[in-house]
Length: 134
Image (tube, rainbow, N blue to C red; front, side, top):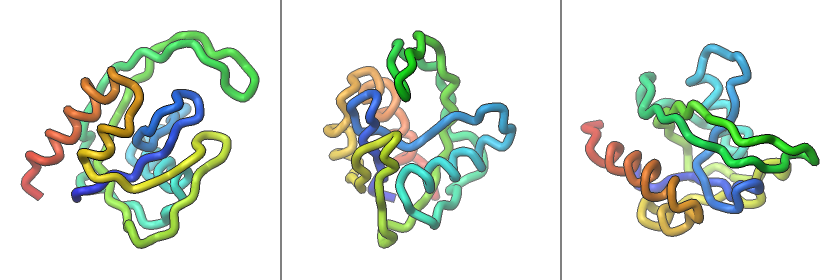
């Protein structure tokens, strides 16, 4: 557990961890696993633990998505710690990201262009992961 699979997000122009919208679906762990598979192409995704790893409320600036303006809003960010097989083929999901890649923990922080996400979210999650006794 020394690398992170990330996707280069088309809207935010930054490398990011995978994720998506639950859109009313109640099994958030299942949503997280499905999004990881859909956004990266890997097939083997398993939870390291079934509990929520982290929970944040994030601001999202207004942006354009699929030709439509999406106004500023809040996201309830539910993070699960998942494990994938780095020997599997990866691919991008063109409508959401333009690249997918494995990064060391240090390199993933260097790749993130969003200062708030890097400093307040990703660093916290990496520290938390490094302190786990798994």
